[in-house]
Image (cartoon, rainbow over all chains, first blue to last red; front, side):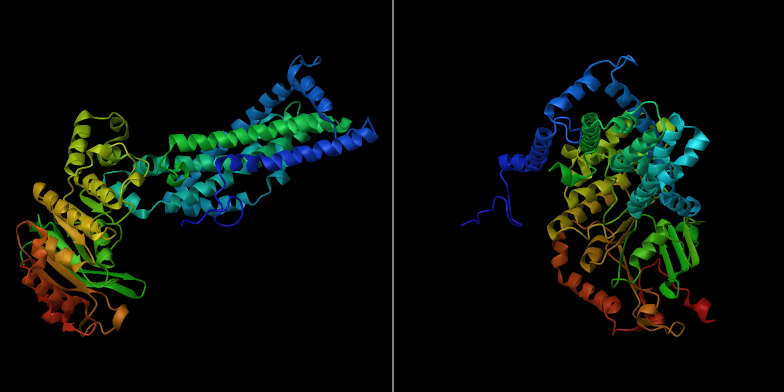
Length: 279
Length: 296
């Protein structure tokens, strides 16, 4: 008789499809439930409570920031902030991805460049980016450049080092094989190794996005006229928990979608990259 | 000894050491065109090192290594290679893996345009290795034997002057292995190739080769008395085998085949059986040894 697999407990558990969905939702339901109960308790005690706004307050704040145009700036604030923030994030991350790729790839393949660059990049990577934020603001100004530079400097060393490691992992045999097929040095770097590294780059960028958001919000909080981080730190002065909650939920949503999108992209576009993933 | 320009490969006094550890000692070897030269020896004796020296992946510590009279350089299109693993490019389909040599060997801009003739040629090779149905799959979707067939076609399509193979069938099951042996013999004959084939399987070496080299560190020589592992391997045996293509695997069952394998096993693989360098069985007409130069 075949063994019956347990549904939830133990190493051999094999939860059925429906249960898998339910299990995934449980922590979310618990969190929201807990919040609603706590908020209800505080609001009955004091209807003016600002700390844990109830559903009605949050939805009102949502309407105000995401659906109605702001009178002073004549824009919908949430969209304006999102656009400003995403622009900074995109420019900073793209620059970091390109520079990280070129550095990592060349250091991984060319011993001369490895000696030249690796210890320097390892050193740079250990500078806490937020600690040099004042320097960046002084040097590049408090406008866009200072903020994108923070994102760039905060993420590119990590990307470069990860691409370097991935390049080193490509078997020597593969590179020698390319040479015996007539590839030049340039050909090996940009036509044999580069295409093998691209999905890894996307993965690394995906994982660096968390840090990039941190730098984005930090720099917006300190000096800015718009952006998601700016707004959160602005309304903090009026204890507007309702707006903060909406903004945080929105940032989380965006980050989650980027992560999901990049993962799907790799799975669809590079089916050879992680053969185990598509089973 | 005739002029070394007549030979495709000419190695004289070649040695290779990693630090204090001598791996290859005083290798003298000449290989003619269209030879199917197999190399056997105890594990760790430096068979693959010898192959990598010829490939140019590693550099000799001493001696001369010539190909058609010229010193061998870094890996290039005149020498093809099939490794046991990692020969294929994981990001390319099977067809593109075979085509990639044609593209890589052209200047960048010209290679961007696919050529119909290349494609047809690649498809022809795909057919000859019976993988035409798998043209658009990726390497990880194929079995080990199929991957090795692609790796062979990928190298053969470039028509290298010599095809180097480093235990290419080492990871395959016995049935697949025999099929692959027949395939490589067919290709060798069809394309008049010169093959340098390293294997740890004696039976495979004797079955495939037209010449077998036995590389071993079990010998005696007054100039290197270093014990056991520190001693560099030499070619202790060099025999001509049949000249024609083996027609079937039934030859492996004959008595003579078995006896020959026993002889080589004793000569190269038995740590107790120590021949002096002067008594090595160098029976192949191309073989030579430069002991005299050093002794004098």
